[in-house]
Length: 354
Image (cartoon, rainbow, N blue to C red; front, side):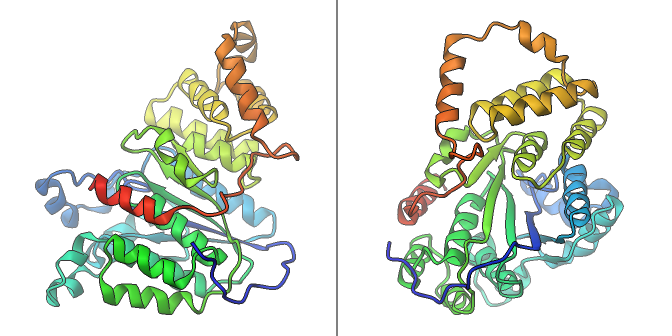
């Protein structure tokens, strides 16, 4: 795809703003709408009936606390394809959880229903991309972003496309062609095109975290490159955010504590999660060792000496060596996205999966 020719931002000083954008259903909330009965029940649920995903409350609180303590302007936003009619219950739930946020957007399904645009009721890519771009338009050009979604719908494609549009890696013609292929409503495509023209081009999105609520194999997301990190739980997400410098080891411990105390996790299960995300190359060996030592001292992981007693099979040694080889020279995981994602192929695969 050709690169966009928009004006780029001037050389940046150290970013002073961190933005965390969250999908709501299946990412923050354990929303159940697999059946018509569950879908109909959602508008009538009270705030106390809604259940947050294990560890997510501790994680969001920690991100704000660590960023604020470091002098950053921290902003948390939520984006949901649910209708605004359930907005009050959602906002009350966030207040109940002690989540401080800076904005929340719902999809006005009634608007599409009244205008007879029934296809737009279930097509969320155009809506979410437009809202993300509107949100970006209001931010400082150098604000860094971390995006959180799930594997239920199209979050990997939406977030990656958003990141590359903001970075200027997708031309206007290519963006229009990909959205038409999905297919997004023609008017919504033109809305997205118009909004993205106002964006200052900067490589703003640092990471995309996908919560594997459906237990999709992580290998299925390789086409999205190392910028996108699939995680099986929010302990793994916290560990990677520690690697990125967004959390401290003490706040990673808080997420681990919340999973053990509130969701029945065991130190052994957390140890397996840490080993898995390390084996997949998302954190360095040094980070793994440091986290293990601290969390074991807090009794949140098995004792480190037990880990040393284990014989490492040859294939684990080999995969660890390969993971180390893939890292950048400064010892941090390589988060540079591929030169160009093939969005037409990704959109084609998405259509085939529906």
